[in-house]
Length: 96
Image (cartoon, rainbow, N blue to C red; front, top):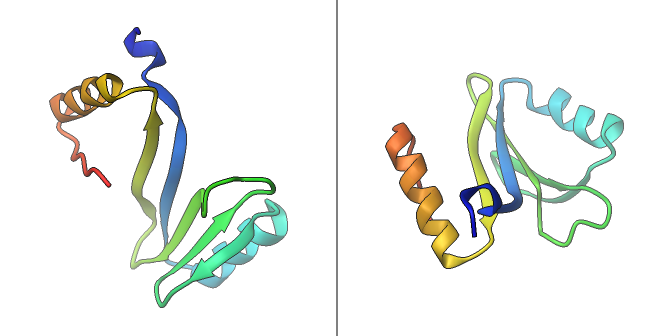
């Protein structure tokens, strides 16, 4: 399989926000996401008919930004190719 087919789909994204309540309201009221769970620092959100627990993790933070991005890959070999490519770019890879 070619590297173009390695990523099957986006798993989930963590967004940092310094305006947690306003951001949560936006994603629920405007985007129509549903809250799956919440802890002290984060809300876990998903869209209608998502089969995963969450697709967006909204996290309280002193600034805004992307905490992490999780992908699903098409095979174990695809995972190894993507990990190598990400490592080469200087970004950090964490497996879960």
